[in-house]
Length: 238
Image 1 (cartoon, rainbow, N blue to C red):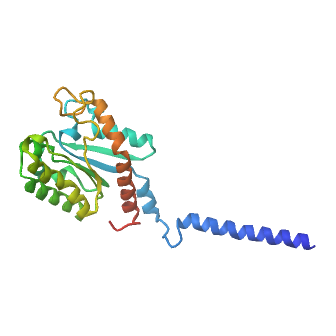
Image 2: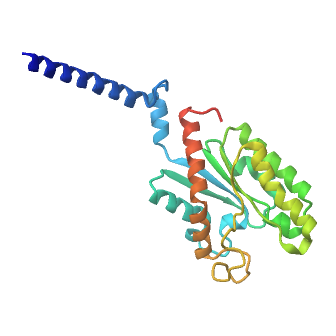
Image 3: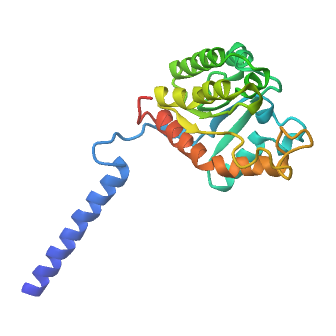
């Protein structure tokens, strides 16, 4: 009899533990609200990421299938992410040009943005104060719309001198820190000046160069996706 009673107690305890485990699964984490049907439906839609930049984003000199947005989308899908990456790159665009077209380049319904601008500012020797002011406005606009941002940094060529390079190069990390952005320090990291990874102009990545950029940026982009998903499901305020 005692053995049977012990068995019933064990089974009863197991049932209680099972119920508690099921409750935790349904709730997600203790204290977290259940997702509504609408929130669940929204969470199943592809995340809409806009790659907003210049020729480095648009895929200057490449087939569309070789561009950064297309290669990035393929890499993310291979890692199980349900995403659509839109190519909003315009060759020759400065930060001023980007600011002017921001409203239509990043439409309503965008879940996250990768901002890659500044290379043409540096090539033209535009005052870093102008670059900073334009980037501040772009970031402020996106933040006001509650769109998570991955900021890709850019660096100045050496021909303008150390003073210019120091001022220009500081723009991007400064803005990332001040605004709590995900930051990838240099978009062309691992590719710049490597003839095997660049086109004949020595400035624009070849398909293999784009692949290197995508591989190096993936952790940062996945962090961006995490923020976008949290925003979409209402589990964060920013």
